[in-house]
Every structure is written in C-alpha cells, then in structure tokens.
Figure 1 (cartoon, rainbow, N blue to C red):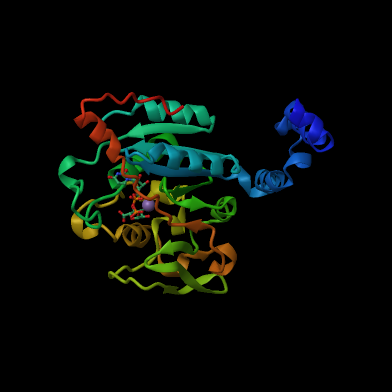
Figure 2 (figure 1 turned 90 degrees about the vertical axis):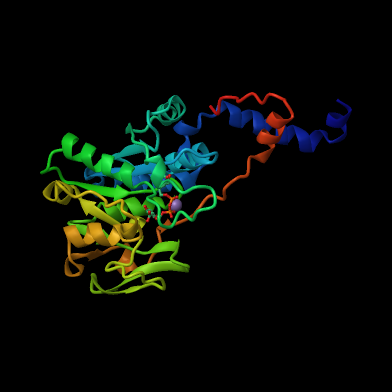
Length: 303
Ligand code: UGA
Ligand code: MN
C-alpha cells in the first residue's frame, strides 16, 4: 500500500492499462492490438492462390529438443492457410506425447510413423553425414500422399524438416509453383545461403560452395513439387543407401524435372524465406547423474 501511495500516479495508470488489457480478447481486436500479427495473417489468408493446398512433409526424430522445435514450427503454420501437415515420427509406434502435442495445435495434420532401422542410425561418435536423416519417414509420406490424394488435384508438396526456420511468405511462393519451383535457402552448405542463379525466371546456374557432385546443388528446403508429379513418378522413393545420402535433392529433382523446367521463385531467387537452422543439442547430463546417485527424476508432462 505504502508503495502505491508513494508512486500513486505512475502506478495507477500502469495498473489500469494492465487491467484493461486483460478484458480485451486479442482475437477480436487483432488489428488494434497487434498490427504486426494481423497484417501477415490478412495477406497470407487473403492470398487468392491459397486455394492451392500445400502438403507439407515433416519427419521428426525423438530427441530432447523435439517438442520445442515442433512447437516453433506449428506457430509459424498458424500464419498459413490451406496447409496439410504430414508428420512422420521416427519411431516403431506413434507416441502419445507427439500425438497430444499435434492435437493441441489445432492444425490439420496426419500423424504417421516409421523407425529408421537401428543399423543405419549413427552411434554416438559417428558423424550423421553418411546416415539417412528422415529418409524412411519421407518415403512413408510419399506413399500416404499417393494413396490419399487425387492425382489431378492442384496441390503442392514441400519437404520441411522440423528444425528449419520458415517465413510465412515462403508458403506464398510455394503456391506459385506450376511444376517444380526453386528458391534460396539460408545458412546452408557452409555459406550464408545457397541459391539458384536465375535469368528471367529460369535457372542459369547455382551459387554454392560444397559440390559433392550434386546435379542440383540445393537443400531439401529449397524446392516444392506439384502433386501431379508425385503421382506421375509413382514408384519414386528416396534411396537410403550410404552413397545416396547428400544426393537426395538431386535424385528426386533429376527424376521429376530438368533444370530447364525449374521455376525460379522468391523474386527471381533474390530473397531468403527459409533457413537451414539447427537447434543446439542440449546436454541433459544432470538427469543421468541424479540417477547414478540413486535419486529419482520425475518427468513432468510437457503440455
Ligand atoms: C539436411 C536436409 O535439410 C534434410 O532435408 C536432408 O534430409 C538431410 O540433410 C539429408 O541429406 O539426409 P539436416 O539438417 O542435416 O538435414 O538433418 P536433420 O535436421 O537432422 O534431419 C532432417 C529431418 O529428419 C528432421 O526433420 C529430423 O527430425 C528428421 N530425422 C533426422 C529423423 O526423422 N530421423 C533421424 O534419425 C534423423
Ligand atoms: Mn536440420
């Protein structure tokens, strides 16, 4: 009380504002309260191209940071209309924890699963470079798409890993794709970005540093494919053999298109709307130490 009397004027306005805000329902007053949120939603949801559905394929590996990564991604997806999220867990069975998380987002989704065989997973000291990451999972998603969509539907397919960063404008670019579209990807290939170099909307060459004999030197996040092509090449699956790791993008593009046919998007590939970010691996070492000391560590629900 003493505090209130002393700083009466200042605090009463401050508290009044706080109280007022609590009575306002943000979703009814978005324009007034959060113009920065309202504008992207309005532009994105009013885009006439949003009648074209996006099937977004996200493999997801069990790890400590998984729920945090998926939460961040889901919150980007609220800005995107008409997107169907295909999430494939790298597990023998779909887990309750991921299922509950996905339900909590209220986004349209299907929850699938397949475990990467143990012998192909990197052991602790091995590099992940020659091991398939999310390949078995992407293949299950391709099968799901072929059995659950109509080959003549006008829709796009995009491979979106759970740890990348996506601008909502990327999804507007995806919807412009007629056959196969390409664009820059940030923070990849030991560069600030890799990108197609485009002339009048067509790919002239590629800007990249790492070559690895990639015919199409782009990351998986750097292209989207029309649904018709996924049906047309109905036997295509990602090759999980060691020699094919790192060639996945080139192999699918080489099967379904040619460099001449690629469509340059994101303002003639001059804008970055997706970044190949990587969540730092958190060392949850104290749990093990507690266990060793004979102490129990109660896992609380993450939701
Ligand atoms: C890069 C590309 O961005 C991937 O699209 C590509 O599949 C991969 O290289 C590759 O060439 O194999 P990177 O960031 O190195 O991806 O790999 P991660 O992010 O670790 O994994 C890609 C996706 O697969 C993630 O969504 C991850 O959750 C999932 N994943 C990873 C699994 O489902 N199982 C695994 O054992 C590892
Ligand atoms: Mn990644």
